[in-house]
Image: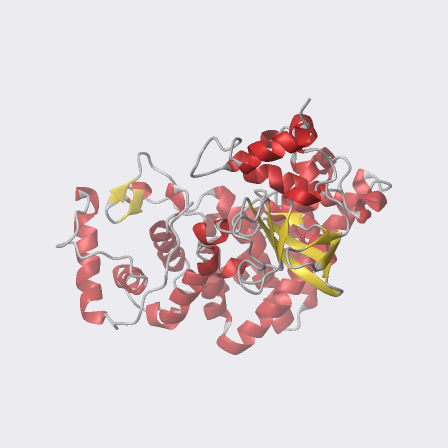
Length: 453
């Protein structure tokens, strides 16, 4: 009878498990599972003979970028820490365009199934390790025992040593711990914000933070560039139309209506914007916006329109509006309600269907809904308020901000939160009873990032 381990190795090497040539998900995921479980004979060796000791295989990355981050290795006696990329063969590095992606510049080890090109390194300067001859168990056993397509998140991110401590605490004790840590994290943010207030003033600081908040994760850098190109002082005193023209124009997102098909509902508005922008053009390069992977409701165009509405609503003084709302609120409930009113944007037709200048959404959608407004309250309004308390040396006033954030419900989850939950909770489902508020989420994130910094 054939050696099924060797037989499966041959099948894998011949691409038998590839059902989609463009996206061989199963095949590469199988290799990622092998690396994550470390079903390998130790010590490992690179193609050029260097010994590799795996202190920590890294954290499985479930978003764009290298497959594992924060790995800890000792390569040829030298400690290394950083991301690891896994492929079927070395040529996949260039096929996937990693050589042009800065996210891969710090990769410390390139792990592949086979090396038919017999390369010593790939890319140049990055050690290359071949999995195939270093498996500690037959490949058929691995394939049979694990449903790779349903590989559980809990196995990708295993419990941390802190989980053993947290399991001895009651839910109420943990909630108190994470809530306190959340307040501390917001105060740390506030310290940095107070330095910016000292440098550029309250209103410009709030404006830059709003731009950052409108950028989400994908377009934070372009929004930061836009805020520098069009500072708040250049918008203050302008009509809403001129302010919109300045922002859309500097962003490079305003089309010439004589050259592009504009929906009838937007044509007059777009023409007016263009007429205001045309004589004000500076020729400065526009930011580079990321559109891949964005939801239709999260386009930069919609976020810029929301930004202009928020600025107009606060009479171009967003910092004062937020500060006064918190200071003058009668209760934490009214404070949250009034902040939501400032930060939520439910546009009137046709702007409620605005997607970009050449297209409309199929149905009306708020420019900034309650969910996103809550995120802005926690990550923008409260830290900004705390920063003002720092800046003005009024520590007692922080209590109003604290009470407001304690009322905030749990925000949307993200990759970092999911990783933290699977690191710190046994079982992870326990987090639903503990991390019940936005403040507790902040504390969980803060402890996680401190622990892995």
